[in-house]
Amino acid sequence: MDVLESLREATQRQVAFDARRGAFVVGGRLKRGLTRLVRALIDVARHEWPTASCAGCIEVTRRRQGETIERAAHMAVPSTRRAGPILQSRKRRRSSASAFELCVVTTAVAEPVATPQASERRECKGGALATRHGQAVDRDIERLVSRPALIARPSIDPCAATFVTYLHEKLGLVPVAAQVPIYCSRLDFATAIDVLAVDVRTRSKLYLIEVKASRMRGGATRTSANACYLHNEHPGSRPRGSGLPTDMVRSVYWQHQLQLWAMAFTLRTEYGVELAGAAVIRTTPTCAYHYPLADVLDGNARVDAALERALLAL
Image 1 (cartoon, rainbow, N blue to C red):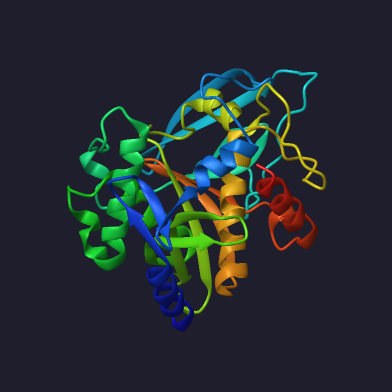
Image 2: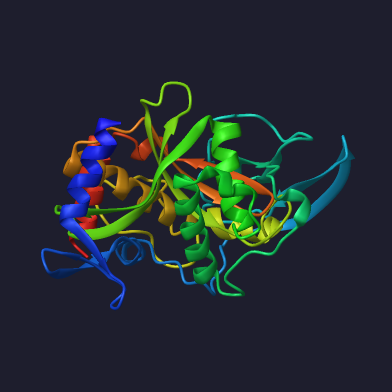
């Protein structure tokens, strides 16, 4: 794609990563990272839990055509505090034998994914540290972009294999670039896009994908506790700024959505790249979760301006 080649040329000349200092450099100067910027606006401490949570989780394991399927059914605790937004899945279907419904506060669906490695039941890379695991998954996805046949190799992290398989079989996409550095002069941050993908049929539509990896196997990652932790409002004040979406709460989900928005905003305003879609995909060794860019953040000029003001004020 000409657009992708132009983007690569522009970013390679503009942005470099300094591995020793662990930061991006633009014009000889260190730039703040996107993750730190997002957390400054939506701060979710890792030891805190949401104000609305699930009362119970019933996991049912059943077999269908020789494949183990897990479901998670949840009951919400009535809360005086506002829960997070209902997430709309593009598939818009209820839980079935081939899909999971995470929690009553979300309709996002996770689907089991069978990869060439599925029968090996190998462990993820990176040990107990989530950061190291995420870095290992990023590196392996980058390898798979240039050499797809490596997906069957034992050296590939199962989360990376799940992600690439899910893109192709469920979404009809193929990754064409990974870890693409970008710089936003309007917000003065630099980051790396996890994955850029194109549709298999025409190879003309470009998609932005942010990858989140989890070592947990099975259906609902960490079951109800994780679902609530991701999507419901955490204690503390809400993000401050006039014109921000009214359903933007202090949650991990909205951190991820803001991160996705910032990258899509940068591609459009800095490099003139128009996307066909953007999504966060949470991948595990056995299934994947698809969270499209929220409608309120997708091409909304008023919200774009409000978020730009809020981030510049930090």
